[in-house]
Image 1 (cartoon, rainbow, N blue to C red):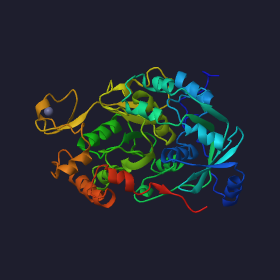
Image 2 (image 1 turned 135 degrees about the vertical axis):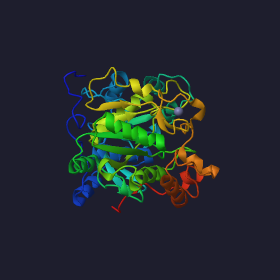
Image 3 (image 1 turned 120 degrees about the horizontal axis):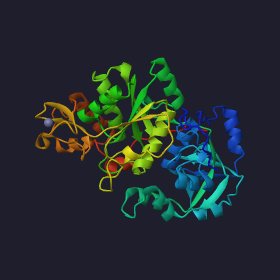
Image 4 (image 1 turned 30 degrees about the vertical axis):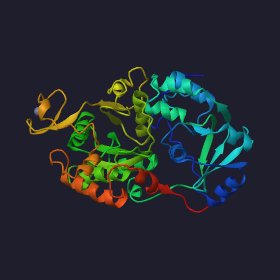
Length: 416
Ligand SMILES: [Zn+2]
């Protein structure tokens, strides 16, 4: 039953950070031993388990049951009345489900790279109409929409139920420098006396327009801190490699464009849904759970180019209850040679003098061999991504087939 009485403005979302991690080795071994079967995780599902266990997805405690999924798709709320905009699913083939004779009430050991990682308590086993799911999320019929393709790439059955992590992830270089749990972030903000923190979601190396978008959002939100939150996860050919996004943002602070007292580069394990406004809502909820009080939404936020309104995220919150987080809606910031500085849509009237980096990622500039001017990209950032391209990208700063095959793991697990 949907309830209108819950307070959606609570932070964390739902009022409490979900914490589903067992650190006691003995207990973890016992839990693993009680399982009726073992399943192997794919990367995306493993990343979502990290988010569930550490409370990034609060108040969600596991993968969605059919009742939760129906509720989210039809009302944008969980059955308990808390706003939630996108499915979080454990998909499995019907064949695999039948072979293992999985039943409601079973506990399943979830392995990642052949190492025990988590336990799933099966509360629901169901199939679902994927056309309906895609239509409810994307309201689009174009089968080339990357989000619709993702829905149709799912297996046909789903397992719903709570998840407990029994073997915490060990983040690898360079991710170990930027991964914080929501609890750690909240403690960090408290130590820095950041009462108001504005989040910036990104999958790109920052050009000067991005830098100024963050600076102006800091003023607009009357923030003490800016939390850069780099979405790390699935990648497509031509994207910036995850390592470059993290190192490029951090370099802005190392080189003094932001003081440490106002700036923190972090990462979020997130696989894109290309769901525009609906994805923006979930981004807001996740950053609220991390302790942020504001969130920047710019052009093409979580939106694939060429599919409808590029500012859809700006209208994401208008029919929703107060989520307790201020949306900072921004158009474009860019360098104009006539204005002789970074300016903004609505100010500058020199379209022929503007170099918009929007349609190409900063990393793709590396392939041209031409060093961008300091007005477009900070020289220190350029140097860092050139170095990282060699170290992490097999010579390229952007995602190639080679990178997809050979990229170093984001996290590994200890022997169990
Ligand atoms: Zn201008």
